[in-house]
Amino acid sequence: NHTPSITTLASREVYRNHWMRVREDEILRSNGERGVYGVVEKHDAAIILQIDQGRVWLVEQFRYTIGERALELPQGSWEMEVENPEELARGELKEETGLEAAEMTCLGELWIAYGFTRQKQHVFLATGLRHTEKEPDAEEHDLMVRSFTVEEFEEMMRNGVIRDGCTLAAWGLYLLWKARQE
Image (cartoon, rainbow, N blue to C red; front, side):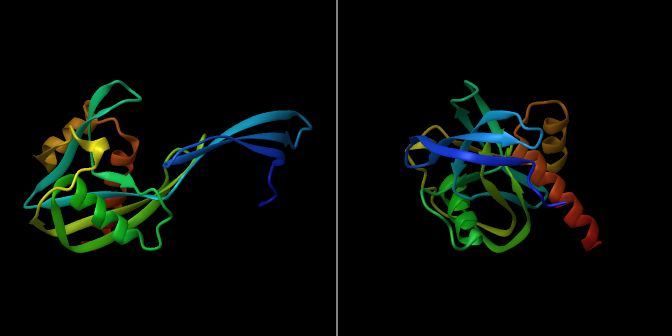
């Protein structure tokens, strides 16, 4: 059934900057109830899983929204719509880790948090890694690159050291992809 259960009656932009747009919609639910829906719109993002010689490369950075440093797979978006998700993934990988990949495999795509934001994330596996110079932007001045064995990485996800939903989802897509390769 593709009939929407919510109808948009009116929409207004309440905030905008280089990275996002926030709108507030007046809605009508199928049960006749009116309501309000806030939506954050952001350009597509990419997340990159890079495994090299049994090690996974992660970035650690301060995440302002939660007020703490977090470990996660390199990920991000640009201040514009992206034609080629692989180009975005390669750009983010180089920017955050200084790594270039011989091969990029698309593992899938996901909605980051569609309860409130309209943002898609493209998931890539990077292999054949080569070190170059990092090119961090101003937001990433405190970013540290760290590598862990696959076992350490999985243990950090299990014990709550890594709680980034996108990193967890990317690992799940990787495991599904890997199972089909064998």
